[in-house]
Length: 307
Image (cartoon, rainbow, N blue to C red):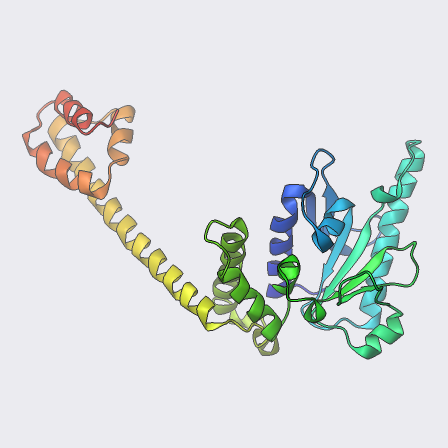
């Protein structure tokens, strides 16, 4: 699968989502073949996930996740299935050589994430929707393969599927972003998802427009509330940068003045000075005019409760 900004974002997003539950490998090379799996997830035995629904299914067994920003062809779906079969064969071979017994839960499942699934592709791939599955989740007909296609656009608009709908297109993704923004400020999902979206849009797309096709840019439908949040984030970043610049300049001036007044500072004292806030540096720049020996500086630092 070709590399593009959506691939990078989806891999980072899914990696961060799944890492608390086990080991995640990006671009895992299929044993014996020059093909790579987008994400390979292996659950951690010591962790008993409390998650529900589709996420619980993904993290309960080893899982291959293949993510598409566009619409995969029949050949691409076939390649995904081959990756699954090659990996399963390698796991079975290794178990036999080590004389170990494998349970069904130790063999990987395949999850193919697509923005939507056409009727024609459903027909030619033979996937079916099982009555007990959520809308948008389709199973390949052979139950031994354990392979599913998730049509993100068709998923129910509920919190359970929010983490998947973030990877959708146009209105599907825009609605999911709005839901993320409405989460409680102390919800860890809110900060992590918005951070990744912000980094993807600003760093990858805006700074490297040549790396992405125009048609793909149009799939990103950011709601106005997200754009407002983004503008506020940028403004806070600029303000922090300006403050850090002022602090660096003030620190440099104070250190030069101290070296002239009391001599070369030892490492411990210099470390304390570098920890001062910009207001404390301003105070020190005035106080040091009365310094003549190192003990003067030491007394001043102690008076500021800097120990």
